[in-house]
Image (spheres, one colour):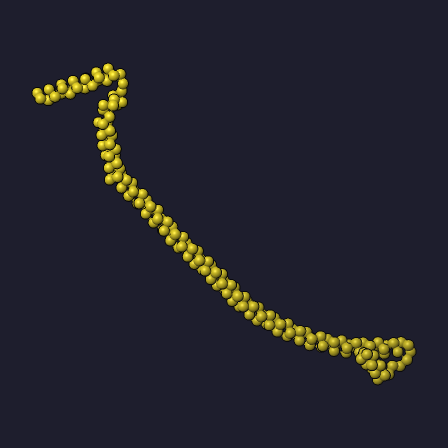
Length: 186
């Protein structure tokens, strides 16, 4: 019952204030008689909001920003390390490539030397074969020349004898051989 009485009194007070406001014809917020009460609740609400921001919201936001800054810093450091590793890997690749090229040049030089050695040996063998064949050919040519000179001398002697006989003379074989020999020698 006390609650009912209290509720009735509160309702009567609200109705009284509403009646006063209606009589004055203005907004209740602009009633100067309630300004101290409005200022108290305004300051209390602003203080509560300030306390909530200072003790709960801002520390959480600051923590999130610090975590993000730490993550970004860590990522930047990791990227820098990967960049250095990439440069080292590139340098190692360039060195390996240069070594491979040098090794290839060395192998090519060795192959050229072996091929040149084989070529020189084959050339020397071919030169020796050619020299032997030239010597054989010169011997055969000398034999042919000697045979040809003999044949020329025989034919020239026979021809001279036949000419002298055809002209009506008697050929002296010694004189004919001497004349033909002198002419053949030059």
